[in-house]
Length: 264
Length: 368
Image (cartoon, rainbow over all chains, first blue to last red; front, side):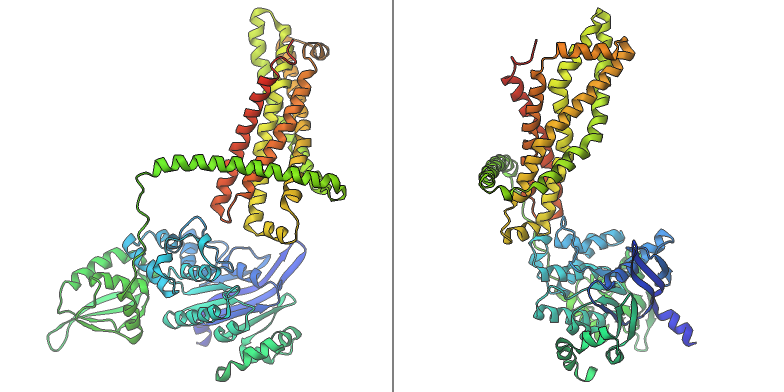
């Protein structure tokens, strides 16, 4: 019974994944499950393959070996319609926002809605303005082009676009990098609110310990091409792998962890 | 989502909604559902019960909100989370009005184009002046001459362009020779094919073909390269290191293309003549040996020097124009595409103008 329940709750299933660029092996035999409603954070040093793993989960790169299943569907081959409906259930926030520079803020968020071909313009207008309000962007910025925006605004608008279709699964690649601490905190709060309101499953990569502590239910640590720890934060910190002791044990780590208080 | 109408104990009609009311769940039935809900909303006494809804997102809430006519119905029961969702719907800000159309727009656009052209001309002159100052500096500091960059440009714009210019040159030579020989045959003036091919290819077609191909090939790549460097802030990085990009990026390109271009012109003309010679042999039976020996008699050597001169000038102009437009690119993708197009079009136009100027100035040179 437990097994059936677990299978039903499985959002992403990565099995035996290998990734390499030419002869350079980036990831080796990665096995990872993401369950419904959890926030899984992937951490690792720069160049450890976090983004590679994320790209494989998104289907942007094909793994050298192994499989990735999202919502129980393999993402590399299969029916076009099935893949499209799966894509509509995922939202992605790219590290630099990846807003379309030829489209205004409004059109950037409206694009995925228009692509559904089921919503009328009136409804799209209301939804876009709602999303903008959700990420605390004022209406007057709606007609601006991405080139006119600051980094923090780009990030928030990119989040609004990622949330355009109310996805069940959200990928965040370095959600708080490039934001000042205040903005970064409010961004984390925003994600927490969204998570409380919608039944969101989140997969994210981050270097920022505050973000990690505030958001993650489970942490996957990548080092030496493998996942060296995959557990809740308390157990991961207890791990004695040198990367983990360095990552959480440094001054910055201690500072972030003392802030955790009773949640820990 | 399911809609169920029930009569409650006190006789008030109740509408019970249940199931998932989200964008992904409603996708296909959005239109029909909207109409159905609107008819229900027409009854003000209806009691709406939303507590049975499993999942409600802003799209679903918006659907209900629009059916209600942008206000809450009199009788409504909600879950606390839904309450918040509808509160937020209460004051959706309107998108700012798009800028109204300007009646004088077209006239203004013409004027702006004029200013823009003027601006570009000034920009190119300023850039050329800057380069002159750089050259002056390099003459006194010969160790700072960017040899490596010049050689890269020579390789990319010269050596790598040999294939395409040869192919195009050969085909043009064949076509020109074939068409002209048919005409000459009717007058019995077969032998003049050598004069026609020699003068037209060496003096005009070779330099023009090479210049247009190089403008399209290397000009666009120079503009795009500088444009991407602007987008990725590489130009700024060079500037803060105190490396002037006019000296390190632009000057080598102009010198490199100034050297490569006459060589490409020579190559293109040679291959085009070979193409013409082959076609003349097939069509008119002129032997290769005869073709060669006549060629030096009927085409004065001045034509070749003219062609090489045109090559140097057009090569440097192409590089200058491409770099100018590359530096003007703003950091967005649309500007990159637009800038590259304008750059190539301007470079090709400039090359043709240069050709015309040469034709007028040297109208008495090299013609028997």
